[in-house]
Image 1 (tube, rainbow, N blue to C red):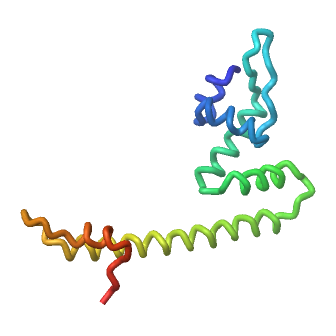
Image 2 (image 1 turned 90 degrees about the vertical axis):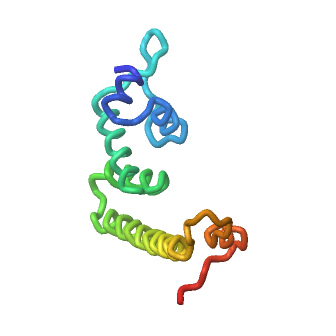
Image 3 (image 1 turned 45 degrees about the horizontal axis):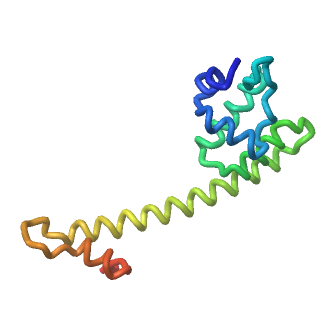
Length: 135
């Protein structure tokens, strides 16, 4: 199948598939007589693995490690678990950061009168470069 078909079946864009090839996340596709990239079922399986990994928030570097582990039938599952555990820790840090941002913005929204006057604590805070401190 050509890159367009592989893109449709994998849920990735053709541009992403070419990018993954350019960074050696996937092997260069075989070429047909007309020069078009040609993908097989094994390629689709690998693309699906990459897409699912990316959907779970793994970085490209982590995806590369996961692919290596996935292909190594002698791997220790402890290695996969450690990588996934580190990713969970990173996600938890990001969640804490996002909750803090949400709470700060909520405090700013709550302090805004939302009327016809020009005074706006949201813009004032953004202008100052520092967030309101919780009471």
